Every structure is written in C-alpha cells, then in structure tokens.
Image 1: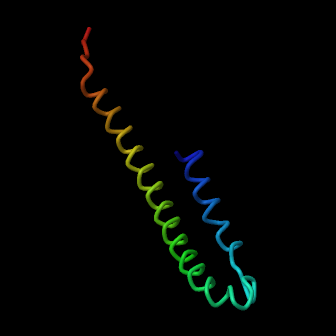
Image 2: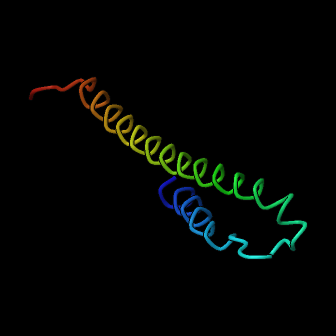
Length: 83
C-alpha cells in the first residue's frame, strides 16, 4: 500500500493543476456552457483525491497497528518452558 497505492494516488492528484483550461480554451460559446461545469468537476476531483490520499494513509496506519497487535498477541500466546 505504501509502496504502490499511496504514490499512485499522490501522483494523480499532483497532475490536477495541469488540467486547468484558461482563457478561451473552450471557445467563446463553449466557455459559457462548459467552463463552469468543468471547474466544478475539477474542484470535486481535488477534494475526492485529497480524501483518497487521507484514506490510504489512515488505512496504512491501521494495518501497521494490526500487524503490531498480531505479533504481540502471537508472542503473548507462546508457551514458554523453563529448563
């Protein structure tokens, strides 16, 4: 997760600024009809990808905690003989 998913989500989120369409990128008429919806979509995507980054980080943290708890439980459940 930390090696593949997290960097991938961060990379995609980092590409968002490159999707800006300035000026008359949609043309005069296209700008009237498309520009607002396009910017709303970009805002939604920025929020969603930010939440995805947070989710991946929190999931990774929880998995790390579960791994430590599992190991501690395994250690605590071992039968030890004194010789």
